[in-house]
Image (cartoon, rainbow, N blue to C red; front, side, top):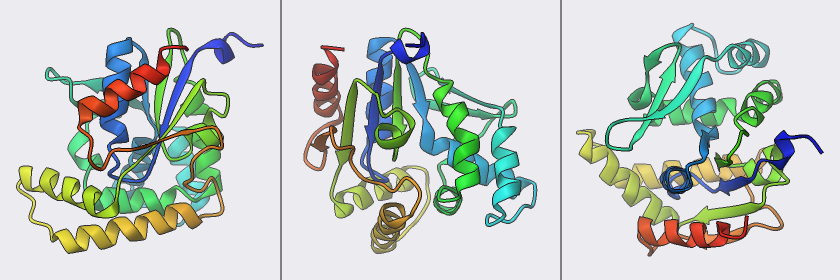
Length: 226
């Protein structure tokens, strides 16, 4: 058994807007563990490719972009997520709807997934890793000690995103957001490569009517035996 395989991992998977990123950051912070926002990696590939003028359907060129990503995850002074790409903070750009759609286009491409797999597994370092995404427990870290599938209704996820965007001064239709979330769910669950689904041994957690703190406490309780 390798030293890396002995590093404990909490894998938190789920659809867009389920709150898995926030929960993963909270859990990682309270445990003092490393954090991997795998979804951001696909967004970063899409962003970097767009900046370079590359089409998002050229799998080989996108894989080259993925292999050369210079990315760093950090926190700002208030504990919020901070994402660096090639030495510049790109957190707001990465979280736009346009970048999210680009990530959903890039994510099914096998050469890109292969290129990012080594990068993702490299985040597994002592004292432990909290990894959030769509295939952390099923594909990237199938031996994770705790696998959580965090979900919420499409309507609730659309409301959360709508509130978030309004807070940034972005006016988006709630109905349009709901349709976009449902379309993204369908694409992610129907793709041939690492589709969105709970791992067989995952614990299902519906966050629709729960507070962030309540969900965080549940995951920490589940993690207490790791």
